Length: 137
Image 1: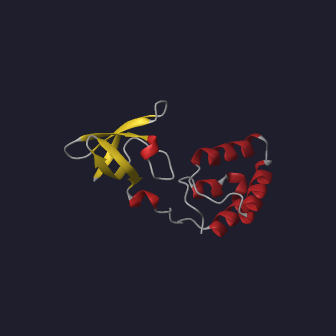
Image 2: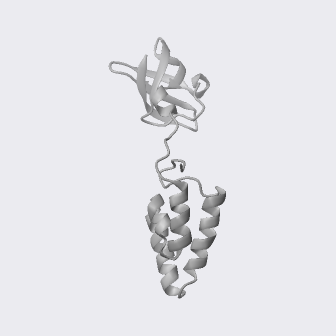
């Protein structure tokens, strides 16, 4: 059957799954997926009376995110315009980009050092995701 998690109590490790017509109870011992249950997750399960068994996430949630932003564009932005935080804006970290721009304005240029260090971190792969958690190309 297919349903979605209506509620889950981590302290008791129990919850309920609702499909179109009925509600089923479950215990965390019946959970098969690698990640813990979360309210609203779509699941597939087997029912035994009013209990759900062998509960797993619907496959769409297991798809890895696809890369959208380019690593070398972020490196170039950090190296040449790092003092403005442009690489952080490119990656979607708007608040951090504004903080970097403000730091540069307040410290009269020391933000360039921050940008240079982040260019190295990007190039080495230590900063490897955008703000939405997608890997860089």
